[in-house]
Length: 333
View (cartoon, rainbow, N blue to C red):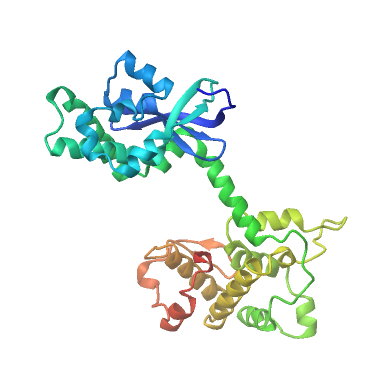
């Protein structure tokens, strides 16, 4: 180990693959590593004391699990260079450790598997080749990076980082000037479905439930976490009412266009519905289609509340025009 400060591990754990255990970690810079010593121990690659002295002094260019000469023909030039650049780090328990980027582990196992297939592995090392195959087979089922993240608990940090990237893309650091985002046709169709009088007088008396429906149909269809962030950033009056519109907190390049796309989708849904009950049923069917479901397990009444499951015989065919018009899912962008 050198005298320069070691990079630290922020997360650490044990990777279990087909009864074999490998120590892994996530470093400060996000690099996922597997412990060199645990790789050798797990597959049973032994080495003498002289090897470890050479390795510590920099005289052994290959790790012990690739040190045998009979493996040389199966080690690519690229892999040989990569494994020579091991990473010294400080484990979570403050122990100096040496590791390799986790994505190299399948390549290392593949060397043993190929050598065994060509009959190059001596009988005394056959178990090592079989263990390498066990690891390689396990990695074929689940990606090594995902395995390390799960074993160390880093997936929770990863999910939080992903949420922050989404919020950064959707939420504007400053409130945008007010612009009309909901066209008149949105409310005109909504009034029609409820049989309400679409006049200046009627609009002024519209029920508060319109706001809740707008949240469900439009804002809640934005990525998870966006609505919560909008609620926290948009200022309120002393009476607890929002002083600006939620959409003023969306970014102009991503958040606002997604909102507009969702509004247009719901307007199309309104126009193809006969009443609010029908609209809620079609909305449920649309969400089911977007989620990959083949049938609707529930329905809505005219107030947007769930009711008893629908019998399949009671369901009408979904209008083909609605399928084409509403096939677009904004979350796919």
